[in-house]
Length: 250
Image (cartoon, rainbow, N blue to C red; front, side, top):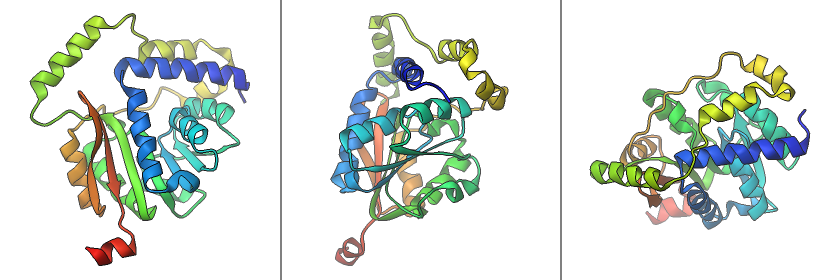
């Protein structure tokens, strides 16, 4: 297992390279955590789906000390960092979202909120539609699902692209995904989990607009779905599960 100080540094560099691709990432995280609090899940069970190194889980446990967080991911390298930096305050679970049996790996049958950030673009459209239905089944009545990622507006593609170009022109040196993994590959402390990871995990790198997510979430059985935060091509989509009282009132 990694030393906590080593994991902290790897976590810091992970966040740094992620901000290259999502420069408003912290604002998106804040909106996501605000949504968790809005449904009263800050003292309940929250599932951090495809939680990687623990970026989101760390923010959840810092803001809500009484929260019960489960982090699920497949990548052994990212999970090694998470296990050393967020455990034992977070349940860390390894499972594959590309297969339907991931639910069986969870320590609880249901969660008050399921959250994910900059991760589900790894899945192709057909699998993501099915996954939304699987997520719906583990959310308790009155619960919430939130997904923060790149989700451009349907009817503003030209302006979104131009804003991205201007932003990149103003930015400093870029810390890339490729550079981060090169550093990991040369770190002897991670040799064993790198061997377990093998040649790497594939990603669809598919970024549909927010409207696609909202339609797919409605089809999956969520009662409400919409964008709760946006800046340029980055957005947070939230979906709600009604309580019995909500359904009666409707």
